Amino acid sequence: MIKKGLLAFSLLFLFSAAAFSDTARPYIGFKGAVSFIESNFDLGYYYDYHRRHYYNNYYYEDRYYDKSTDTVFAGSAALGVKVLKYTRFEVEYTHRTEAKQSYRWFPDIKQEFDSFMANVFFDLDMTPSFVPYMGFGLGLTHVEDKIFYTGTKKQKSDDCFSASIDFGISFVLTKHLNLDVGCRVIYLGASDIEYEDYYMYAVDLYSGLRLTI
Image (tube, rainbow, N blue to C red):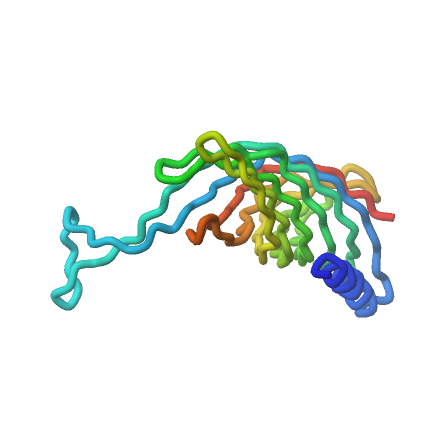
């Protein structure tokens, strides 16, 4: 139900964007990325007696996370439309290969991520050969968790709200073909295992081709 609703929203997102311009230019894009995944279990607040910072005669409270990171490959496909000289709208699907996370206080986890995002980009057309851009996105990430307890394995899945920001440079190869190189920081979402909350993030360093139809 959630995925069908997201698909309907994505199509409405593109059609609404195209309706704003009589010169809308659709495009398709494909990217590959090195994705640095981080998952943090939230262990709550604790008093930092070692630093001894004071505020209104109280100790500062710090938040402690049990963290794990892994580096995976991410591949994405996008369908978009450029509606103004400086603005692009697109819907994008991204799959990240399996991340293997190991924690100090929690069981090992293997994770896979499938993200469905609606993105907006702003092109800074300053030169004819390359175009800096920035953007942001909102969407949904489907997370598959394989949790490895001692002698047993448990599997669960969640659909999580996600958000991203994006910075890059688009090199103009031909009139209809661009090479996009950039960095994306994405909040993949929040979930829980055994009633403990954990939060997932990624930093993608990507490159890809964008073909204007």
